Image 1 (cartoon, rainbow, N blue to C red):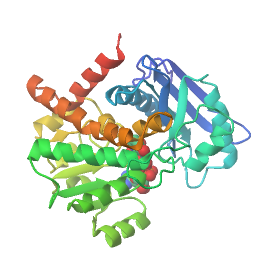
Image 2 (tube, protein in one colour):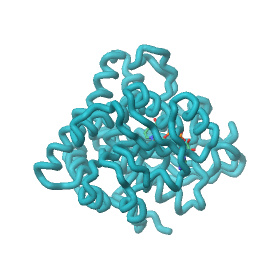
Image 3 (tube, rainbow, N blue to C red):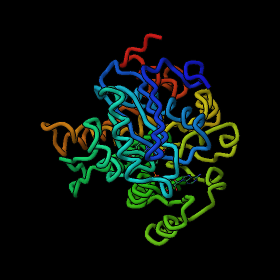
Amino acid sequence: MSVFEHHEFDQHEKVLFCKDKSSGLQAIIAVHNTNLGPALGGCRMWHYADSSEALTDVLRLSKGMTYKAAMANLKLGGGKAVIIGNPHTDKTPAMMTAMGRFVNAAQGDYITAEDSGISIDDLNLMSEQSQYVAGIHSRYSFHGGHADGNPAPATAYGVFVGLKESVRYKLGTDLKGLKVAIQGLGHVGYRLAQQLKDEGAELIVTDIYEQQLKRAEAELGAIVVSPEEIVQQDVDVFAPCALGAVLNERTIPQLKCKVIAGAANNQLAKEEHGKLLVEAGILYAPDYVLNAGGIIDICHQNQEDSSAQALKTHLEGIALTLREIYTRADQEQLPTNRVSNLIAEERFGKSW
Ligand code: NAD
């Protein structure tokens, strides 16, 4: 399939392909927009069915990063990388080293970081080859503990404060006694679950890995359901924290929640699904606003003159941004995802 005619192509500045014979690396880098600064975005490794599915994902995700950086008040553009392969069985050190070399092909327009399926160790291997690797050093800890360069705790905290704000806006309550369904108990989802539990929420969870489910049952008293059942749960909040496109024609009619607030990127299969959620009376927290904690964290770690408090305040600003979106959405009678896009486009100066 041609890139320029691809349905997810949105005037991306660069799309680069790599098939490295010696390591077996198959990867794609997409730089969506650099009006506000170099494109920063994670590298995801996933067992895509084929390269076409990977291309669709990287085009969507990189565009999402442009909007995310703008809404998080960062001087950065949007980009993303995907590696085709199963992170549990296919990954090798040689592949990560080759990925580092591939990042250099974007000539500084793309800075890579952690995402699903990619660890700090993987990034360290990439950084041996490239200076355009972020998220491997840490200076500040927003929670007062040890900061290890992993952006997931900051992402989870941002989702948590944003979820709380969304509940306050829609339901006028705090989290005590509220039922929250979490799809995906990975780096972000599990940490979110812990914070929700600490605030008195009741958890209903799912994952495709048995081990995480057992842990959530034992540590958090969570109720476990199958991946197929999670969207139908009678809950106050649904938190998608696995993969994208979970909100679609099939799942939206099944939802019983009043708020959707989760970490996953590109939760809406199509933009118009935001309207379906409004019609269903569900408040949707735009994913890229809510899950910007990781990128905010990485930016602060790269600034010598920042501080733990500045980082925490920036993360908590996600709640203020959401309130601005919800208020304008009510005033202009528009879906929250549409309003968020409009504000982001005003900020990065969309001209097409
Ligand atoms: P992760 O890979 O650690 O966790 C994802 C979890 O979802 C895994 O436990 C996986 O088993 C589970 N999962 C996969 N398919 C599933 C399915 N069909 N049903 C139920 N569970 C399923 O990833 P993460 O770092 O926790 O990120 C989660 C989501 O948040 C991703 O969409 C990611 O792009 C997004 N995100 C992550 C960060 C971050 O800092 N890690 C930042 C922004 C956005």
